[in-house]
Image 1: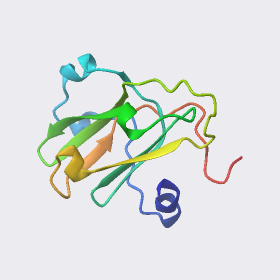
Image 2: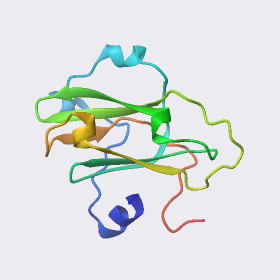
Image 3: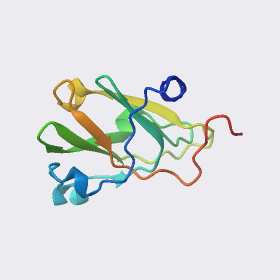
Length: 130
């Protein structure tokens, strides 16, 4: 899905950079104490009422291994995905694993501006590059 969004030019992505322009968003110190660790990602997209991320996988990662955490503001939210279970398998997926959360799953009203706060992996694959 991420690739098709990128190709069609419909991608709305906000990665790891939240500036002062985002002041209305309420950030939470509690997020620092949440379980798991912040997961570096290959890519993120928000389209319609679906958040899509691509994470690394050694072959055993599933959606239940990652937990979405939200910081909310008026009409907008910041999503940070945290990994709670390590993937100890030995069959790495070169392009990672695509995971989706609907706004309904996240408890967000339709049309909420959603930004993704996970760091981008340093080994990110660029579309069209080997």
